[in-house]
Amino acid sequence: MAHDKVVIAPVSSKADLEAFVDFGYRINADDPNFVPELRANELGKFTAGKNPFFEHARVQLFLARQSGEIVGRISAHIDELALTQPVEQGMGPGTGNWGALETLDESVALQLIAKAEDWLRGQGMNRVLAPMNLSVWEQPGLLVKGHDHPPMVMMGHNSPRYQPWIEGQGYGLAMQLNTYDLDISLEFPPLIQRIVASGEKNARIRIREVVLKNFDQEAEVICHILNDAWSDNWGFVPFTEAEIAYTGKELKPLVKSDLVRIAEYDGEPVAFMMALPDLNQIQKKVNGKNGKPSLLGWIRLALWLWKPKQADMRVPLMGVVKRLQSSRMASQLAFMMIEYSRRSGYNRYHGKRAEIGWILEDNKGMVAIADAIGSKVNKVYNIYEKAL
Image 1 (cartoon, rainbow, N blue to C red):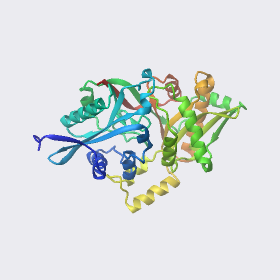
Image 2: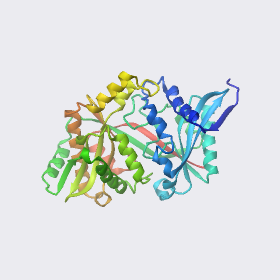
Image 3: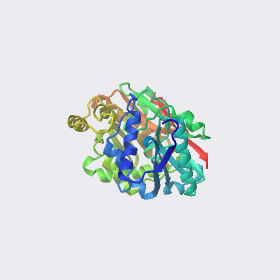
Image 4: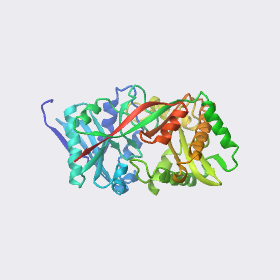
């Protein structure tokens, strides 16, 4: 079979899509740090009509076969909203993406990448940013540091074999995304405690928990802040109303009121921070190797979602409105929200650690905050670029 021709064809049927998803489970089954997502969620991610990313993106999935056996996969896609962004912010006109690369063979990987590039050229693209799986809001970047421990909820994981294969095809580093590990059993340094205490004495500041019975309205408030706060960041693409609703529905079972905070200044929402119990801790135990829990697994998952126990935390999103970002108020609000969530994570959910990020390597404000609270980089994801 080693000498048989590799045939790469578009995913064109439901059976092909299922094979595309199942191959991801199969190829990673022996990786002790791979965490299988629920299969239904993975299928939904790559399905038009379910994932609202498809409402503003052109997407083509590909499968590689050799002697009739699937030996690789890749996605190629163009986010129409990304094309409208300023070039200096990373995206911009002519920029397409590929992602979801999986194979055991370097030759197959290079052929899959070439196929994705050809498809992007055929769609009028002249540059590629990769990997993206699928959007910048989902699982961007290639893991290049931190393969020795499982990812937290909503973070990607891949084999280290891909880095030299991709870099060998002329891809250069466009941006580095870092996650930071924090021991939440430890109190923050005295300076940070004084900043938090000072904020607590300021009658104009209110740090409140989200109100779960008003979940949809709270999600809109958060996403309004997010789109404003991140609008100048590298790689930013606006979050649409449909994506807000979709993401809110996906996250709702995980959201705990004392872990998601909104900061108000003079009664106006100006900042937020979202911490989530690390769902991957239970998914790794109950999802099997194919994303299909047993009946007992479903029960364990439901019980954990109802009342997470010994749950570590991930902080996937934080934002302060743009008009405050250059002020001392921005860091004070951030420290207050982080401290309140740290207390809840440790005292109520008995977590030991939290992961903050991802954070852009050039986001000096967030890097300074991460450093000030004593967190350390534990995972690094590279996003590469190449002219087509």
